Length: 578
Ligand code: ATP
Ligand code: MG
Image 1 (cartoon, rainbow, N blue to C red):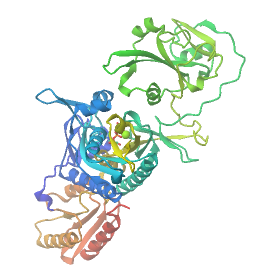
Image 2 (cartoon, rainbow, N blue to C red; image 1 turned 30 degrees about the vertical axis):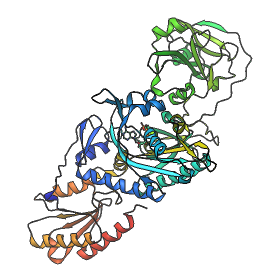
Image 3 (cartoon, rainbow, N blue to C red; image 1 turned 180 degrees about the vertical axis):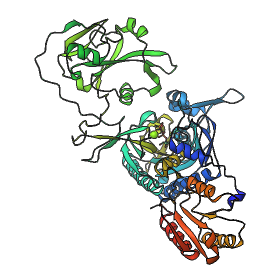
Image 4 (cartoon, protein in one colour; image 1 turned 120 degrees about the vertical axis):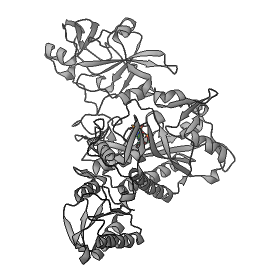
């Protein structure tokens, strides 16, 4: 492919809006262009990379027997109402109406649609297990679309769905997908970690997230170096510290003027934060989004609340809860902003972190301006409606599996797999007939990969100050031949010879034959990240070229034949990425 005939408009700088380097590089390298918040065009080079990633995904999904199909992105509301997610999905679900005011949504995921297809297509156990997948645009009206392809509103996802007869067979299908995902991300050249994850709104029992390790990632991960525990921070269980054994004191109201925070009250009373109870107030909503109840959450003063654990404990979708307005909640429940405690509340659900069970002589707000209680004992002075772990597993806290201190790191969630169980087959009444002719519900799993997020995660991990460094397995072209003087016959001839020789070996070659200064061409080649550069200049007459890998700093002078064979060897070794 001759660059002089292609569109390539690289930029020196990306707009200030692009915060992450990976996002800036994709714009500067002319891979993507923004059209609206979270909506992008893939320019020719970027689209080539998308297709490379898709090829890897297809190969590895086909290999485990998954069958590709293609579902509509426009989906009737009825299906989503039947599963309950028309409400549960919340404002992220992109809702549209047709000219007759019929409701539809743009698919954010396809559990409902695939279950409906299977309901109409399959009836016998003889066809099981089944695994269908597609690579399709997905739509999510994200509250904060940002970081380019990382959190966009229209993005490409590979989504697969398995259908099995029972839990054991679902376990086997899940295991196959798990291994397939490991191969996919390895072949994409990513440094990733698999962690246990929360099932979230999608439902089901087990889940794993595949996270590309990066300080820019939005997923916070917890792992243990002494054992194999690794989980998202939302999911990671905490080990409760045992309560200090003391003689219970009397409940005492003490004057604590202007001490609205845990820090202030602990300093004022000269006590450790561990002896205090922190309060967080929420209001929850019902399906019509009317306020349904107040929730007061209590955790030890030195702990952080884990919202995902709270939402799971309450068994509500995450957008059905928000911080309460203390002016409304106060008169209804007895709380007093800055001085809230669990003693004597009414009309609200009390959620208490499991670590507070058995604690005595704690300090907490007295639900009265400028007063706290001391000597507060769990069970005697207050009780929980829900007593469970709702805190964050902090760095250095004991590992829930082996007790050694855990570490935190960050990652970009590039894929997630879920054991759904029978949630969708039950709600959508989807059955198969077993050997005896009895009807049974399917056991389902679902498996997602963010293709376009993966693309940016690769850039995040593979770049330097000059630009992108694509792994050979996903590079838009394997080789760039940079012609110093494209009008020079000897140079042009050598370029053509090398190009056609490489192409015979299925190697994708870009020839930079533009009438530009050499510096411009080198900068562009580095920016767009082509793995191998063969430069043809003055030595063309002697059949010699410069050979350089994008990832190395050294360059060597080789004969054209040597350069061709080096390129062939390297590409053969790395084109499949494993
Ligand atoms: P997140 O927690 O980042 O919002 P999610 O858990 O809601 O993502 P899934 O429903 O698991 O996402 O979707 C499968 C995959 O699709 C994710 O692992 C991710 O790679 C990708 N993905 C999800 N949301 C987006 C988005 N807004 N932009 C780009 N890719 C996304
Ligand atoms: Mg996910």
